Image (cartoon, rainbow, N blue to C red; front, side):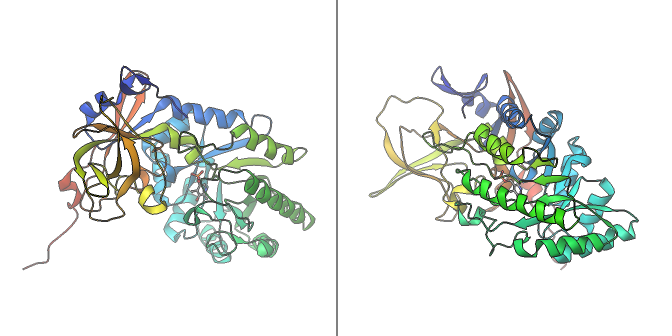
Length: 416
Ligand SMILES: *Cc1c(COP(=O)(O)O)cnc(C)c1O
């Protein structure tokens, strides 16, 4: 997980120290390692070389244009969940022919945009959506490529907010309704049935639920063939977890891949995967500086200049991120809650961390490359952080820190 050994008592990201990045770009600041992004993509791709497979990076995990462009250059496709994400992919040089479009609420405008762009496939999540896509494709005199996202009803054993494959979830179509829906799709003349799709959740640290879902999907593929419906691809979604804590383990990609490839042996359908977090999570860091140390009777607070609006995962999912000082301090450690300036008690980045801290110190929050910047907001009228990409000894600003005036430039007072 680590492109970042300690060197010369300062935390290094590739060839540059975190302290130098903070001095150059200010804090809070997201920093990504090009080498780590490249490595994770290549590792994923290498695990599937024996069967045709397309990696569609889940844009929502980190939509910065530089990140998308890097993946596009590596040959990646993209999994999008909005028309906005499609625009980003195209602006970053990604190919529409490698785009799959997921999501339960695709608007007419988004469907039109995706059809005109020529995407690879719509991952359709309801009967009503099937009708809508058919209707729009008809008006455009086009045929829309579709898969159904089926809900395999397996427990991903992850945080309930990021489990998507249970039958009570809003995602996908019920497993036992899938065949009837495919038959209906076949009668809709502006659709081309391409494949099948499932995505059971995020941050899965056990491969058993993936394999259970794959078995169910493959059984459905076979049943569909008996009904005269042939599929050309099988999209197994994303969701592969990463280690967030140094001592935590996540399934190695090779183990996940070999189990799936074994199930695919003798099959001719190609595979699609939609990894997000696996590709970006451990390639990103959030740098933040200690504003105040506030030692209370029961708890000690280190108030830092990043907050829940910058990194929402701890507040939203009680997620753990490793937090380490960028410099070494010759003083005893104390137990600190690392909290932000936002006016919410849920505004914490880490709790009960043993650290030696002084005011002004720089902290590195690890594993912040996925669902960090992408879930950030302007809550409390806080400008979003700068983003920087490290490439060996080079550093590149890939998104400017927002300016306060920009935050309300589209707002208007009532006339007098
Ligand atoms: C969020 C999402 C992904 C990516 O999930 P990760 O856990 O980041 O790999 C893939 N596919 C769909 C449909 C998603 O909603």
